[in-house]
Length: 263
Image (cartoon, rainbow, N blue to C red):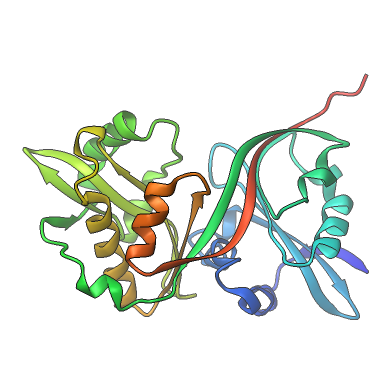
């Protein structure tokens, strides 16, 4: 088995297309919008890729994506690249892979998560999306205020407003609900929803469902495969997503990872 950095987009894409919804973030990161912020570690057997781990550095905190349905090959890859990992990073790891990093890093669990995929795309067309508007950079101040009040600590990159795939509901000149994307690639036809939030005072009124459905309608019109991540204990969100056609397709863990200091 051979380990290396990968640079061939087509080769990487072919591997990830075997399970689009498990790797929807990684496929999207092949887009030129994200590509400069990526490093791709891969392993090969008999000339064929059998595992890929992505380190994304486009945010203030680097993020490692190490997701696979084959534990052994990803475990070997992680073991081989531990010395290349930054001192501190966030990680998305398929179940059990956190044990591979235990020897060299301290891991703080941020919970088990589901990957969900929009399987029944017909359901969004039946949702009432009245009053939902497309957002842009001119709405940045209102967006940041909403996140501060309803979703503190979320990772929002204002650059993503350039995708034109953020939608919200305004009431009395105030943004009260929003849905957007963490990853969006019209070239690779994938999108990962994220930064979905509603003011506490406006919850349980169907606002989140309306903005999410409108966002999905926009993406469906472009022929895009749609996925998202959600904590397994967020029953309200999971129920909302299921009502507009999403299904659970995989689970994984999120961790804050800090390199151990050996003296």
